[in-house]
Amino acid sequence: MDIHHRAEIISVGNELLRGEITDTNAGFLASQLPLLGIELNRMTTAGDDIRQLRETLERAQEKADIVLVTGGLGPTADDLTREAIAAVTGEEPTVDAALENNLRQLFGRMRQEMPPHNIKQAWLIPSAEALDNPLGTAPGWWVRKNGKTIAAMPGPPREMTIMWRNEVAPRLRKILSKQVILSRTFKTYGIPEAEVAEMVQSFFESENPSLGIYAHLDGIHLRFVARGNDAGQLLRNAGEQLDEIFGSRIWGRDDDSLEGLIGGWLGKTGLTLATIEDGTTGTIANLLSTTPGSARYYRGGLVTGSDATKIAFGVPPEVIATYGPVSPEVAGIMAAMIRERFSADIGLSTSGISQKSTVKGEPPGLTYVGVSDASGEKTWGHNFARFRDPSGQREAYGALFRLRERLIELKIA
Image (cartoon, rainbow, N blue to C red; front, side, top):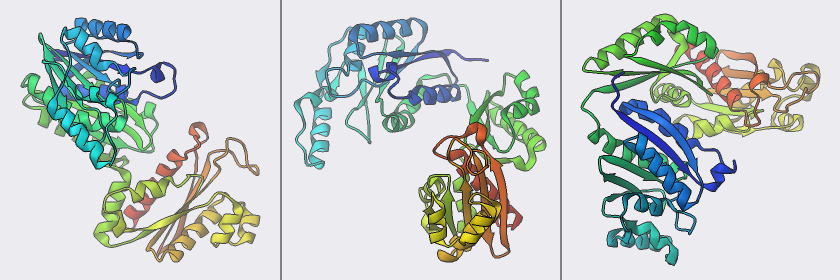
């Protein structure tokens, strides 16, 4: 594999060392570097200590030509990333007038006076360029000196992600080799990760394109990275082979989301959808309602967590008494009821056991999905006991995949 650039990732913060928060930034950045043709040497966590952080930066620069730092850009005394970078470069930070003006205007728009300690967020050193942060008060730093690059980004994942995409990644592309690097992700569902790996075993023997397999809530993702002038053709060839191997079990590519695909199909046909959830904590409603354009097709949803609520919403008590609150019969009635109540073309329901223990003889993680449309009701059963988590996200995606399956049956897709 022809990779000439090596990177290290440094995550800064005592809260990371204490396990108070999970470091998602490092994982995100690690997934992005191969797409730029950059090899990751090491990921390190450093506390809010100037000596420790300086030593960590110095070690990173000994082994890598690109160092990505997240965190430590806040306004308080224990936010020391700027000080550490200044020490490593041997430069003194000074207040940049333009950055100070931007900060004061930002606080002014919030109708607040800028606290004096926030002035350090307007610091720059001579070899640093400020990186715009549209979601926070902390600009990043892009530092180039002695053939080395340091990119310092904020710790909050939302701020870090947008700064990476808008500021850091484009700058890295400019300084990297001119080699063409392309990537393509293929998303599968309903096949265990080990089985997927077996089905694509032959691809692991190739370095170009290279293949990575990743487990996500919406299935197993296969990501290819191809290099060279024929990178596009290499990815097309890989895609054709995967279509032969997986067929319809590949549900999406690259940035496709399940909720986005379903919404696109509904939007094109003018059909509407309503949901009612038990055991998924409103996750389906959240996924659908936060998809751009969902107001055109998503009528809304209800969340229920008890038999009494189901009965209040319209499920006959005798059905619950006869078949149990978590059953295909109840799921089918819930789907039909929500479809009628919200005057929607399609109703989607989940009825599941969110507890970690058996309920009325049924195992934890058992979930029934119901879909109601003009042709009637259809139900499916799933058992997510091995993967049970209180948020019900796996169950929510399982329900959306069943809805996708039904839309394909109805030739709506």
